[in-house]
Amino acid sequence: MAEFNDTLEAAIYRNPHLGKYVNDFTKRYGKLPDFHVSLSRDMKDIRYPNIIYPVGDPIFIHIYGDPKTEKRYIVIEPRIETREEENKYELIKDKILEMAPLREIPEDPEEFEALLDELFNIAVEKLSSSGGFIRRRKISFTKQELDKFRYLIKRDVIGVGPLEPLVRDPYIEDIHVLGAHHISLVHKIFDALPTNIAFENDIKLADYFKSLSERIGRPVSDKNPIVDGTLPDGSRINIIYSPDVSIKGPTATIRKFSATPLSVVQLVNWNTFSAEVAAYLWIALEYGMSIFVCGETASGKTTTLNSIIPFIKPSSKIYTAEDTPEVVVPHSNWQRLVTRERGPEESRVTLFDLLKAALRSRPNYIIVGEIRGVEGAIAFQAMQTGHPVLSTFHAGDIKKMIQRFTGSPINVPVTFIDNLNIAIFQQAVYVRGKFLRRVVNVVEIEGYYEEIGGVATRNVFEWDPVSDRHIFRGMNNSYILERKIAEVAGYEDPKDIYNELFLRARIIKRMGELGITSYWDVYREIKNFYEKGIEGLSFRI
Image 1: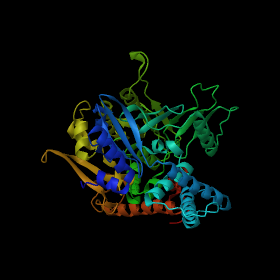
Image 2: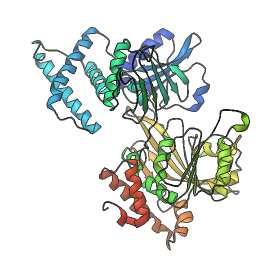
Image 3: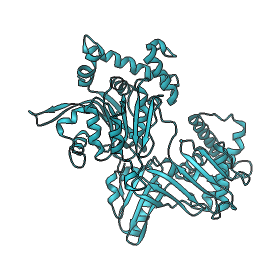
Image 4: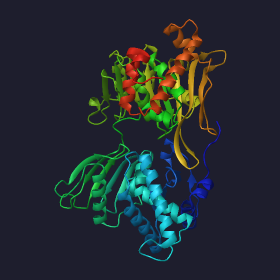
């Protein structure tokens, strides 16, 4: 597969503050950090990591530890460094605050950002030409200063201020704020880490929480010192505000989880995958195909899994088995089970136990949050007995996926691999300064053939990193559509099934055009389509 990682040099070229940080670090420690576009679970074993990764320009994260230094999470972002810069920044901010009340504030985040850009440009122009109404002299700004100020204003007005880099980082599970100088987190790979983020003092932190809580509609105060709310990205936040309740200063815990999943239409709009990929998966799930969403840590596997669950027939009984409850099922007939890993040995319930129980529950679909070990063998046993399975799995390509399933500890016989019908491979990619997620391959598993000594597979969709397009390689050549589904669906000519695929792709595209993007609205349209066909949709295509 083509390499589409940006180099450290390219990232520094676009982000001078990153170059300054790397130079200062290298001079101090005598070693250059490793730059990674995405992280893998294998990095957990690195004793002394020295890794920089992007979470979307201009924010980068440095994980560093050595024999003399505690392993830390260091945010690299543009920061105000001199009193002169601070004065300039405050003048721009004051000018924006002066103009903002005269404008109608849009509700849409993109329009809000565009308005902020416009006000920023006007403020800079006024200050550069006359120094504003207060000062007569002109104020000059460098490009670097303007880029820095623009980022900081957007971070504080649209984002969540100093905690924005942590909220943006897909590798973080929890954020813990214990007073102004103790901000730590739980990382999906590097576990618990202290950060370099700090507030000036507890008063500033209290003001920050007060402002943030008002923005999310859950105002905190001395009278109401404990509040729970939801941040704009869907993360849950609990704030404990009052000093007589929280002795060490204001505290907060942020759990990075969205209660409402992203819809398949939103993911198509963001080009995580194409409408044709979505339509292909729609048909596959309607006809009970088993699908695994594969990729590295934080590649967006669970997000994609949740987005395609509404494609399963509305009348289906769905059984979910997870270690951490993250799968969301819109169907009314949903049996949701989680493992119990604490307590006496005899009272524990593992994923293996839940999957064995699933075989006796007669579900139409079994969904496993993530297959990691021996429960994988039970998942294949379920498929073999006619229970379709949806799951996520850590593997970067089809070869690695088959190797992991057929090796220890899962040990699925290679001749059983074709019980799995489709594997989706997703990656976190860093393209032209943006941190994106893309389905890079959709692969069909045809079967084991002795004559070739292995498993025959077909690439039906491939992502082209140059054009950022998803190419349909399986047109008139899909084993799953033509051989596994078309006959069951009653097509005289198996090739006619592609017309159905393109019809459903048009439905998904049309929903995007009409702004039908919320998870539950999209599910409603899919459910109506199942019940009444095209006539059941709330729009024409």
